Image (cartoon, rainbow, N blue to C red; front, top):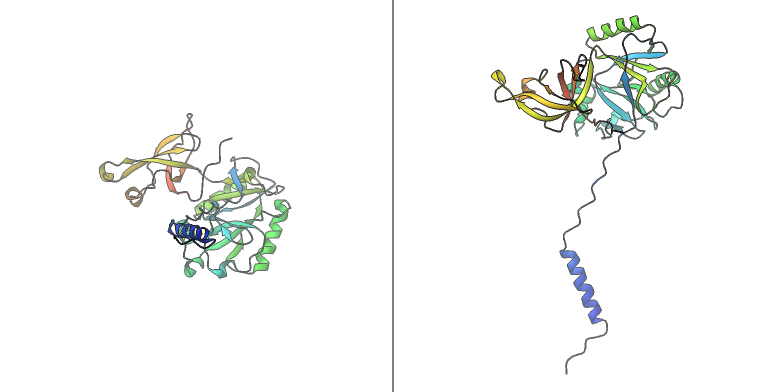
Length: 299
């Protein structure tokens, strides 16, 4: 007679087979990490030369990398964590700070290299100052936040954390004079911050930038071939602004840029004097790749 299996034998066999199948299946891929949320920053509009600047505070516009301290970590404008040596942010407050990571006038590339590195270079970070210009979580007007910023810097007592000097604006003529002084010394321009304004995320007239030229961003569409001495390299970039204007951008490209141009899809910053009647920038000049930036969504 055939042998009768013991009770539960079939159930145990099925469980064993199921376990074996699970072991043989490929491991499930880990869930993709969510993109970091960009901090809600106050963004500057453009000052109209000659306008009455009274009621605003004036500071130098530093050519560095925006750094947002959320109370726990330092982030770029786009929300990417910035890797610093532990000592750099030790003792920083549990509330938000807004400022510029800056190595000095004319040292933008050095600052970017340090900030973007995923391995914190201790010596490099000792050259970078965190220049504070606002307190996003403070409930008061900017007139009050100026004093609060001074208190934060004094309490920290760290030589690499400073407050950007703020002085009350007087007249348009004096503002023009100060702009010339800053630019002649190698600076980029000025920032005007309305004294009775609260910290508001987004672009606003309560915060203005004042430079002897305009700058804007455009997305690289393609590389146009060079001729003559630029044969075999990129002669110009075909770019498009967020509002749909397409044009060639060749002036300002170094030989290194022409040999290894920003790839299509990259956003770059360019400088120009004014716009034509058709809306195109006059005398556009390439400045640099724009990091951590995307155009605001269209309404």
